[in-house]
Length: 297
Image (cartoon, rainbow, N blue to C red; front, side, top):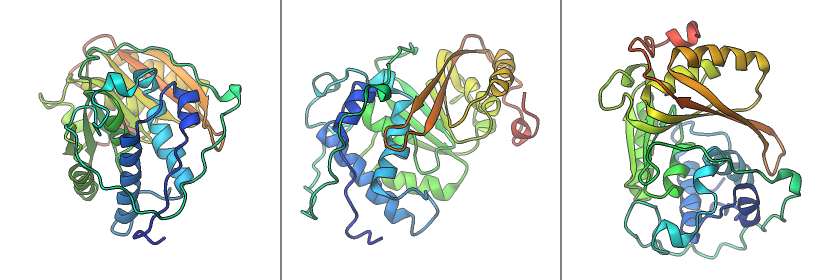
């Protein structure tokens, strides 16, 4: 792919609206496009993602990332997220040069059938005015970067153990002027025992990292009392639910909800697990690096 002339992402305004009761602003769409271009370019230096087709990128990285936090976006409009020229909810406006005319954008998809419409239940979080997120094992920045672009007045910490990926994310942060993003090189098992991170976040996000019980051990120690862990999954079974329930009880949490939904383009089944922090996590958790995966709770 010629990254000097990358394809446009599809707008998918109808699908955003029908599945999340929300649509990105023009400026957020511009940010999505620039993020896509940076990732295509970054792929030549390191393996960031195998998902590079524009529609696949939109569905599996952008839509999937934001589906987990749709309850924070539902009904949000340009008028109640700040100035119409603002590019990120918590940073000042910055100019973006118009994209050169490279041909038409990908055609807008038609409105989905009603069976793909998604309800938007509400999950309270401790601080709705300026919520703090941590994205554990963020990789190429998903779901954390799209969350930072869209959730009003948010602060998002991106955590990954690979220095090279964090260096790339710092570049993205700087080039897109995402002043509400912080990056940390490290592992959840380690930073969860540091005062600046333990019990400091309203929402912990984790996607494609280990089993659900391992994800619970990574996320719950980082949450404030009343905080919410959101675990992004593909398939989900009753056996996994039983092991997760056992784990969250030990970690001071409870399973608030398991949502099953269908992706809008490929109609794949996905799940989001919502865990609530209801009690202080015992100090021995998370256990040492490697132990949660080798000996799940």
